[in-house]
Image (cartoon, rainbow, N blue to C red; front, side, top):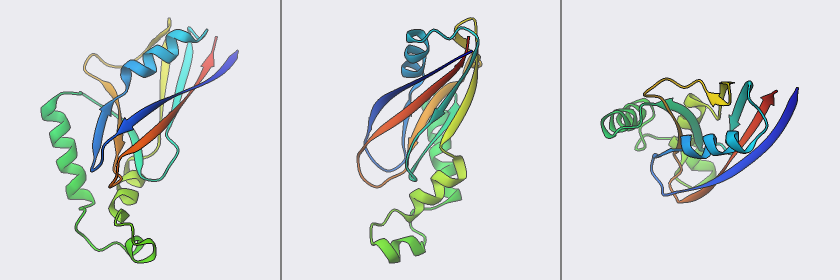
Length: 139
């Protein structure tokens, strides 16, 4: 059993930026010695999340709109009173979706579905450089 830790950086814009990070994760797996096991992905921070979706414009638009309905930017958030940074909505959105994913690896490949990609969702109200940690476990 081996454990390897990798990371990569992704630059984001602002306002529910949704970025396909599947190619970067695939590259980290190909750089590793793991052929069978799993990759755990984690994004440090409280205003971003990771999930999977079919990364095409209609599904991305639908996801962005659903997130806006769940935690609208224009609502009152107590967080904004304390910090005056205007990103209370981004913390709630991140908490709803979560900062991590766990994906099995079989024969050196992630077991994603045909139309399934891994996406980083950055909800903050300013551009960021996000670090994604990929911990690979297996043999």
